[in-house]
Image (cartoon, rainbow, N blue to C red; front, side, top):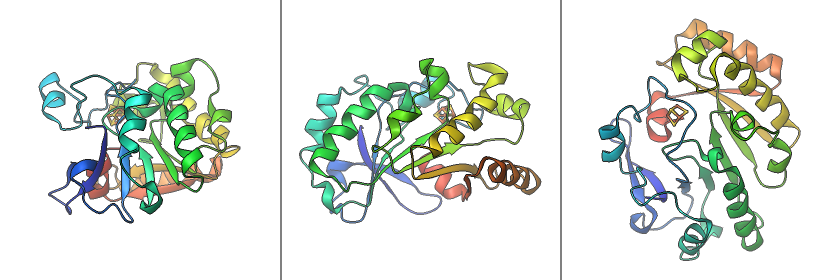
Length: 225
Ligand code: SF4
């Protein structure tokens, strides 16, 4: 499933293919670009091959090409949707260039399309360069998982392949993104994180000059990031 909407309420959330999502007016459309991720978060459903493969967001046919994505989008009117969200069952910015190509093509047709990327914030380490200038004019909101208030806890939770430097890299990515993206948000999930740690994350975000979004656990279950 490469394009989908989120259905259901707390406790019975589901992902519905865009083709089965009915009237798209006011809905968020999610783009599932990849199942790759530099992390292996302890709370992520991508823990075992079996868990991954039974999830409806597992890309059985492999990663969709830009053409496949655009051909699929061509069947729908994106003027009526609320927001296009690059999210899915992996880290969308693993495919940074393709994400940009898709946005560029869609913006030609829909100049007012609202675009959000939900990310773990490690794109600069993944690609070995500062990619944030390329977000300018493409992305309205970037939502970065803060996950933890310290580098050690971040690594323990995310098991990032980039090791202990990951936490600083995520914070730096947020600060750099502010120059190019109007709305930079860092997120933590209530219940997953105790209140005292959420408070520490709030202080970190204040220092970085970004908004902290404390997400309801139900929302986290829906979007997984
Ligand atoms: S929760 Fe997100 S960042 Fe963590 S392993 Fe899963 S997809 Fe990757």
